[in-house]
Length: 508
Image 1: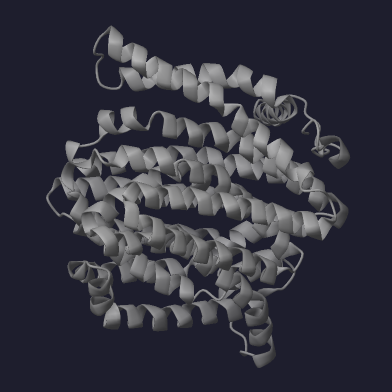
Image 2: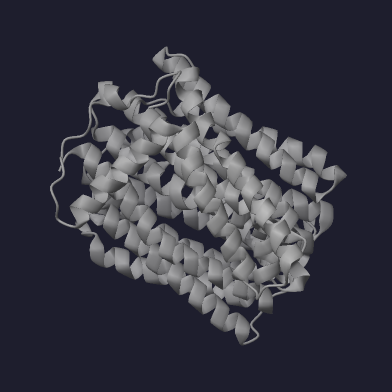
């Protein structure tokens, strides 16, 4: 199978398998709001951010080295395994020792009781992180996607069951450990231990090479993590754990289109770009950016449009303040996938410092904007998030355009058109909601189904009219995928890159 076809099918596998698990996780989250108060949820979230911050600070970009250098060999993988595990033990030990004053600083001293359990789950994840990266490196996307999905299923079901039994915040901690344990068992079976545990003498020069490549990427990853998680700590400091819990829930819901589609496609593109001929990388990057936008934009903006109905349909009344946050934060999912597509492109071109600078400036700008606008209220903090991610998306496109010596318009115009095509959809959803309210009260969930159906019906012709080339390209990819699944004839050769390259005027 041609490399481009493997990349597309890998992305579709990651998305398809992840959608089911993510849907179950979403249902679990909605059920959790029936059993957990916003303050309990907020305290667990704060403890999780503290633990995961330590995990990210000790990552050193080692996993990305393994994925980006498929010919490096087992010696490199063993070095990465030893370094990654050792750094994690030190970082998580410091969290347990210093976690109480850290949580107190962010206005949630009671959150410290969740730190040991969350640290254990994170340590288990670290022990088998490299095997998962090996699956990605070897383009075994199906196995990696199924493993992640299984972990999410275990987390959702165990968290809801334990919360229903009255375990409170501890339900989330225990579910985190269960998810990590199941994923670890599967990965140990799937990946040959010789690929990552073949002993060798630890060499200083090899370690130096790993760190020289990985540390700039690690700084970028830490900054990206900070832009997604440290805002919760600022919100907690400003408004307390309850508001932080609602903000975090709204953010996670708004982030579903980006994480479910953008992040999974990013995982596929790192090894795909690494194996791809250099002259094909830029056209493939442009095509990936346009395709992901036409998929993510209607999902993200549509989620914001139906936010009031979603919250009133599924959430306990204690969480009603979530919907305005969700409506504003949905904008971030439109912009975030751009960076996730550009990042593997920069990594394969050995430009980790460019990635680092982009992520650091994004994180710094976001946290400063939240700290300033957050003084006006939680919704203004949500506005700051959307502005920061939008600016970062434009910055990523600018960097690539400068590197490739092409106009920014060749990237931006095809990305803007699917977003514009969402405007009629939003108007239709809001109009349908007002008509439903005037006509008669409907059973819970029926109004949401009508709004969603109306939005989908309006978006399809809108996209074909306002972004025709991108929409047709997406339909072509889906048709080829379905033909292959059904055993029908399909060309393995990828299309001519120049034929799919977006033009400044007409899109793809």
